[in-house]
Each structure stands twice: as structure tokens, then as C-alpha cells.
Figure: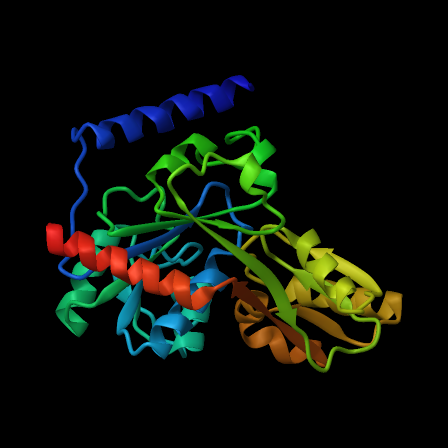
Length: 314
């Protein structure tokens, strides 16, 4: 293993040991907390899964809010996401979740403080903790972890993309296999195993578009487009959570002209990060990423039952 990855891994293991032994303590909220997280840095589908889980809870009449760090925002402290706001203030993914689900989304570096704000403002209800597997300072009632095929053979940061070893899955309650992940590749004994598939909804896509995006695994998005019969004239990839500038727009327009493309296609998250520049790229198709969970009703019923039992015993 890479030396820096070994040092990183030792630090992660020490921190987890301190939590496991109670030296470091997790703080709990009045409402139940369901964490949705992963092992790697981006690209596992956490946000689409939170959106799916939110829709399933809404179908059951379960009230909830979402607690998020607000990665990429330029503001500090605990804030309630304004759906009419910008990624500069709240981060792209919290803004997307607030717009799609219409529920309170609270951002804060300390998710416990964000949860206190949520309960003071909206009352104790179920909290969905976005990207929460490593945020152990907030106690949770149910831990969901998404894994990909790449996670099974990847390395720890900074040599690879893993934030934790697959061995840490022993803390999870439910493990979601995504992106071709196999149950044989992970330690799943005694865990609930859910299988999910990501797809896209692409409408009114221009002929031979320029495909551009700033997401964790852009090649996967490109593959999904090609599977849907959309063949790009050109491609432009940026870092995850990229905030587009006027210079980026000029370069994209030049790329369209050089490639004789019919327009542009990008993701919902990128559309948020385009902000006021979005009109300059017409015609532009914004593709929605959707997550499908096998036997979703049974999965959510099991989750709610486990939470109820744990709360009863507490």
C-alpha cells in the first residue's frame, strides 16, 4: 500500500476505535436519524438515493428533513436551504434535494447543530443524514452505505478514492450494491443487502450534443447517455461540484462550434452550478439521474421497523 494511504488508514482506524470504545462520543437528536453514505469520494449515487428514499418516505406520509454538510458552498454555519438560492450559498446537492423533494434541507459543518436547528424550527421528525457514514459525531438509528464495483478493489486516499476500508461496513445496517457491485466482493454477513440501479431520464436532447459535466465519475454518465442512444459530438469534463465561469461558457460555445454539435447535454447538478449562465447554452438538455431500488417497499418497511424497535429499547 502507498505510504500516504497507510498513514491515512491508520488515522481513520484510530478515530473509529476511539468512537467504538466511547472515548469519542456521538450526540443524539430527539428525532430518528437515517444516515446515507458510502466508502469512496463521490460517484456512488448518494444524492439520487437520498432523493429516492425521500420519495418513498413521502409516499408513506413520513415527515422528514435532510441534514447535509453543504459541500462546495462559500458560506459558513447552519443554514436552511432556500430552493430559490444558489450553490454558492448552499452547495449544489443540498439545493437539488430541496428543489426536488420540497422538504427542509439544513446545511452545517456540524450535523448535530444542523439537527438541533431542524428540530427547533420544524419539530422532532426523521432526519436523513446526507453523506453521513464517516460523520460519527452524530448518532444514528440506521446506517445505509452504498458501494460500487470499484470500491472492492480501490485503495485508501490519497492513492485511491476510499475514505474507509470495506471492513468498516461492519458498522452498517444496510448495504446497497450499485454500479455493478457484487455481494461476493464485500463483507456482508448479517447485513441487509439491497440492490439499486442508476438510470437517466433524457428528454429533448439535441442531435450530436456536446456532453459536459462536473461530477465524480463522468465516464459513467457518458456511458449512460450512449446506452440511451445519445452519441456526443464532443465532451468536456470538470472537477466534481465545479462552479462554471464565464470563461467556461466561452470555451463550451467554441467546442460546440468546432464539433458542429446541435447543442448541449448535462446533469441536474451541473445545471444548478451553471447559475445565470444556463441560458447562454441553449439548446441545452438537462438529464435527471434516477435511482431504482429492488423491492423498495420491503426495504423501507424493514428500515422503519428496525428504527422503531431500537427506539423502543433505548
